[in-house]
Image (cartoon, rainbow, N blue to C red; front, side, top):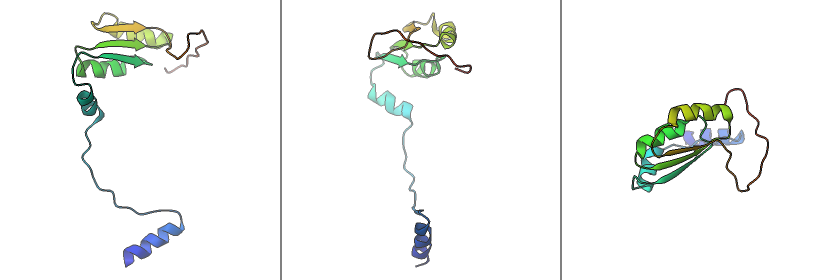
Length: 111
């Protein structure tokens, strides 16, 4: 009875009280590892930045080939220093899109 009164009170102000049940979800890496079952994949890293994702996924998929695209000149320099000599990694200092065209790319201070 008290529960319903409290719930109606909060409903007046647009709030809803609900019980959250804990579910056991696997983390994204575990799900990805299951989806990409074999370790010999071709993985495209679009917007590679400084290689944060590349670092993570090279550990998960050691035998895979990675194609990383990063249009920022400054971020690409860091990416190239980290992964320029890595086996199975191809780096491209370009943007990737649905059309082949040239355009301006605006850099920002903290890429």
